[in-house]
Amino acid sequence: MSIITVGIDLAKNVFAVHGVDENGKAALVKPKVPRDKLLELVAQLAPCLIGMEACSGAHHWARQFRQFGHTVKRMAPKLVTPYRMSGKRGKNDAADAAAICEAVRRPQRRFVPVKEEHQQIILCLHRTRQGFVEERTALYNRLRGLIAEFGVVLPQKVACLRREIGAHLEDLPSYANACVGDLLAHADQLDQRIEEYDRLIAQAARDDARSKRLMTLPGIGPNTANALLASIGGGHDFKNGRQVAAWIGLTPGQYSRGGKTRLGRITKAGDAYLRSLLVMGARAVLSGLGEKPDRFSRWARSLVERRGYWRAVVAIAAKNARGGAQIRRGFSDESGRGLSRPTPKKASAEE
Image (cartoon, rainbow, N blue to C red; front, side):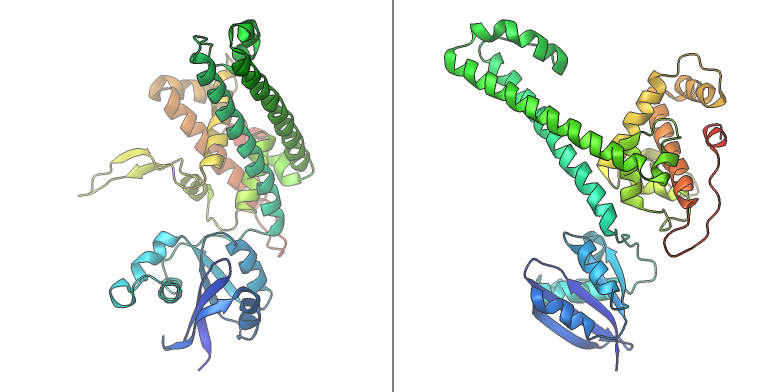
């Protein structure tokens, strides 16, 4: 019988493959497949469903497998664990491949969309820039801790630290003075790197019509628009904007029973980087409200008064996620699927 479902346990060099026929019987069991032989093995199979865990390299392999007519679905590893027969065979690559093959066949399974190569290129810019930002933050914390050992305590703001540290350099011992100078020079190099990546990201956002439409929403700039587009693509994997907000983790967790609805804190699921960009944009919106008379500003001010500052921030971030999804879905994707036209800027701000 022909193989209809295949589970692949991804790795760096040696992969495990498990395939079943229409009766669920194992018809392809390959516990050790070298990296250079995996594509050849998959190419020999008739078009079927291939399941994988969402891990490093999964996007690349998914794009490769789809070229041979296969349907590729990726799952979070935690959704595969319950299907591993640990009591019978233990934890090994072959058992993982069999568990993936079983999990991908479940009708209610949630899957991770496959990113195209251009999306991953844009995300490389964001991940590299974010790494430089984190390194710069760690550097300033290290600098502040070192000079504190010599009785020099400066404000936490970077601008105040850079402005006031010059007056205390002569009070430090010679070697400590040299260390502080090297750290400040390295911080300058990181600033230049971050500015360069900001320029590249802004240029990529200006060159994409969908990013331009996203930037019409209040609180969404080039970085957020670019990251949203690269993370979610055309948004066709979501039924509506509310699913996007829930996927990012901007909706409250539910603890309901006995017919009574109980909502808790936001779930903070999904991409923390994307969520932080939306939250920072929402904070910028609130800081610039002033006494603006438009409907959105009145709604935001009343929300702060009724629910508090942070709940208003999350509400605006979730609103931007939903509105951004509607704008993205307003564009036809490369397959030619026609979608509804996005709402204009004024209408989306006043919803």
